[in-house]
Image (cartoon, rainbow, N blue to C red; front, side):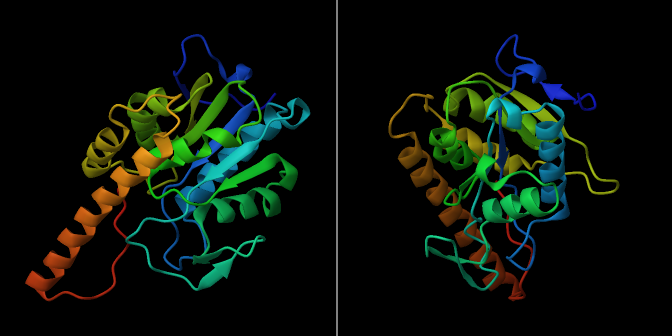
Length: 237
C-alpha cells in the first residue's frame, strides 16, 4: 500500500481503498500551449502514485485525463491526435496522458483521454461515459479546486460513488481557486443531474456563454488601457 493520501469526502462512507478509477480534470496548459504546468504535473504524479500504490491496474482501473484548453488560450502549434483530429496546441488531457506513460510508467491501455472540455464542469459531463463500470472514482486535484468540484460539480455530474484525493501543493506555488471560477461553475452546473442525457450539451453551451463574456471584458479592457501584450490565459476552469 502507498502512503496515506489526504482526501475530501464525497459519497458518504467511501474511502480511498474503495476507489477503482481516477479522473484528472484539466486546470490550464503551459504557456507554450504544448505542455502542462508544474501544477498539472503535480496532479499527474499524485494520480500515478495513487494508481500504483492502490494496485488499480490489477483491478482493471482506468485513469481518465480530461481537458482541451480554455477559449482564451490560443497558444501552441497545430497538432493532430492519432485519429487525425487537429487541435491548436496539445490538449491538456493528451499531455497528462503522455506524462503518465513516460514519467510514471502507467500503461497506455489504462488511460482514457477526453479532449473537448473547456472548463471543470465539462471535464466531468464529457468524461462520464469513459469509465468502464460504475465502481467508485477518485477525483485528483489541488485542495481549493477540489473543494469546488466536491461541493458544486461532482454531485450534479458523477453517476457512481466518488471521493476527492488532494494533491500536495508545490512549495511557493499554491493553486488558488478564484471567485470567478466558482461563480462560473455554479452557473454552468445549475440544475444538472448525473443521469441527464443532455448534461454535456447544456454545460458546454453555458461554458461558451461564460467565456464569451470573459473574452469581451478582456477585449474591452485592452481597448481602454491600450495594453495589447499577450498575457497568461484567463483561467475560469
